[in-house]
Length: 130
Image (cartoon, rainbow, N blue to C red; front, top):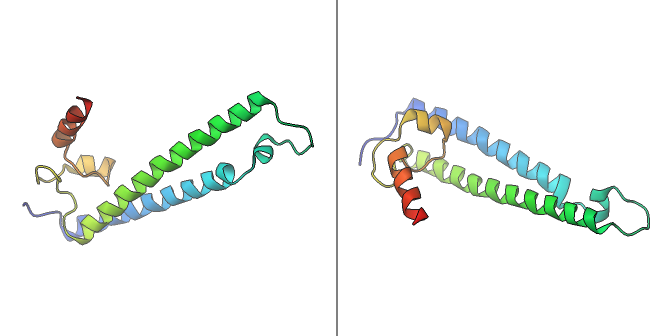
């Protein structure tokens, strides 16, 4: 296995990952508070005793499902960020999980929690399409 990144670079990526983690946690919290914790009547703004129109219910349900999907995706990203932080601690950050070569700095800057180099990622995506 190749030697990973130097201490200075690892510190920079760790800071970047921690900031990204904080952003994700804040977004999840905001979505949860704004959408997932509210009742159907609260979301529609209907405080009267009248029933809610079915089209409004469908729209509210769609928005709710959409936001649940966003939260789910962000939680997956949080897990990937946590794994990347662990790789930093283990001195394995920046090394492709498949070919064990150093991942390009441009790729790490764009997606700091990435696990694979571009070539291996493309191979994995091709395999998953079949």
